[in-house]
Image 1: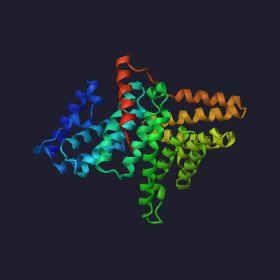
Image 2 (image 1 turned 90 degrees about the horizontal axis):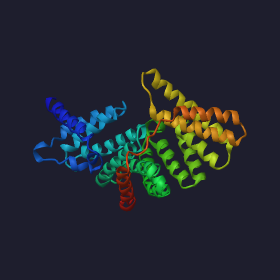
Image 3 (image 1 turned 120 degrees about the vertical axis):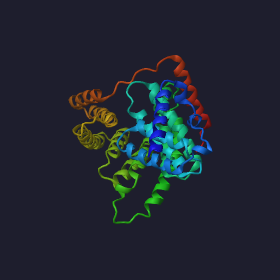
Length: 336
């Protein structure tokens, strides 16, 4: 136990120091993780991963990243913990990037860090459904960044994300086929989330009917999947089915509002849920405006604005150039 605490303390100190170095943040994950034969201890690494998984579900993502770094330091590439640590740290970086409200720089850097980790995870286990799905999420999110928007390359990222989502879905469906029919699939499977994210890519690629089909597939598995209704609403709007869009988005708003209220009552603020809710209000406002209900549209635009987090500008041309170089590197080097 003392060994674990000592190792974690050292990693936390390294993490604090690293936060003051922009170069450290965007370097390859392994550059700070040189392992020696003397330090390898798979049992200790498994303890780090177990604790990191627990902290992930508590939304303590910075702790997760530190624990994963500790596991990487003391494992070989052949150890299961090595794969799990890179995958989990990538997922934690996606989360911190999604909820960060101060800077486009920080948001994009966290996604790039996640990309570095998931590259390594897929090299170790290319047939992991979750790892393939995570790569798809990262690429799609990078396509939504300010940098991608400046260069008009959103669809390039969506096209790169698509095969990862498709592979993840096939792998996950194969795994789900072995579940006991009496067990609720929505509880044990990531399929609704996989369908939702695949549908988002279809939206970006202007394949609105496919996006609608993905949303319906998610909702067939889980009728309470808020993001499934959100995707369905966006797809229906793009297909000019404005009444259907409004109905779907109202359902999503109701489900997301309940989630946000539960978090608030527990003494927390779920900023990622707020971000999703703000988007639903915005899309619903567009639907009501198309239906000629200006009053409802104005009400929902105001609600969306009240929930939308402030995102600052990139801090300086030098950082913007560095981020642009990294984004272009991903486009040029990534192959599914």
